[in-house]
Length: 136
Image 1 (spheres, rainbow, N blue to C red):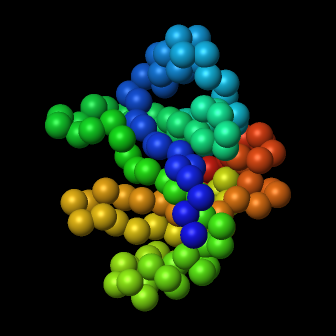
Image 2: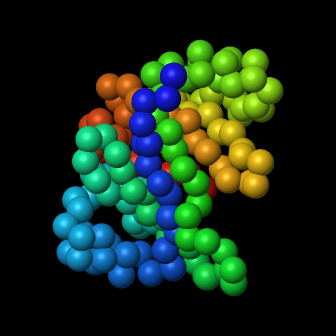
């Protein structure tokens, strides 16, 4: 059912500083960018072996808010996974094709941790490296 951690999503109030830190400082490569109205609002960093760090701009720091937005787990079969989770009493969101062209569903842990479930396919931005254009 669960294959591995797919990505950890973090917020950054200074996207350029975050890019310098992760790319120049840590040596990670950008797999693709998230674009809105022609502007970069986030990017995917390749950590290796199909695991990523997803960085999104947050306009202002929220006092006491952690920079980790959610954890994403890669699954083999998103539909079978959600059926199994529901049978175990865990509510899941509707399965949908995300803007990154990956199948996704969401669950929430008991302390409010948002967990995204991802099933990649041949068209997923994680596989193709193509930028992901976001709608408002």
